Amino acid sequence: MAYAAMRVVFAFMYLSHGLNWLFGTFGGNRIPPLSFPFGAAGIIETTCGPLILVGLFTPLAAFIASGEMAFAYFYAHVPRGSILPIRNGGEITVALCFGFLYIATRGGGSISIDRLLGSKGGRR
Image 1 (tube, rainbow, N blue to C red):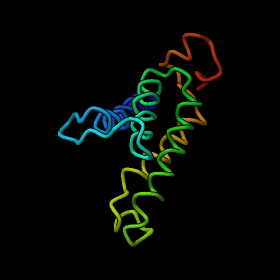
Image 2 (spheres, rainbow, N blue to C red; image 1 turned 120 degrees about the horizontal axis):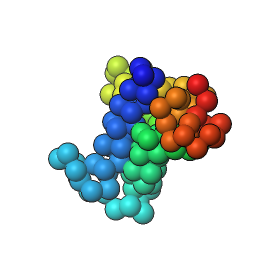
Image 3 (tube, helix red, strand yellow; image 1 turned 135 degrees about the vertical axis):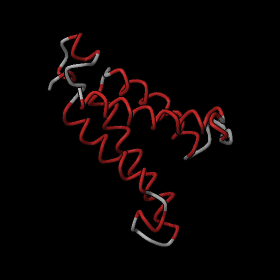
């Protein structure tokens, strides 16, 4: 249960960022979907976020999400003058990156669509 809760919360936080980029929800500024890198990030986040949330194609979606967060960290945070997350505002980016990397290696878990479908993505 705790793993499923972690997967859902991380995915919701990730999805929230994508909705913020693409639709300006939660008080954000809307970014054109075809702009790089922020529009691309919004598309990845609004695609992979729900997949991870429900546990469908979980290893692949979480691996892509982890890579996108690593890219975001080095593209948007490190140039602020420090590699340390506490100094460049990248704490959530690093946490999501490593959280999704863990989810990619573990799969959807026992409470996931992957598990219901009997795929390897639902492994424990």
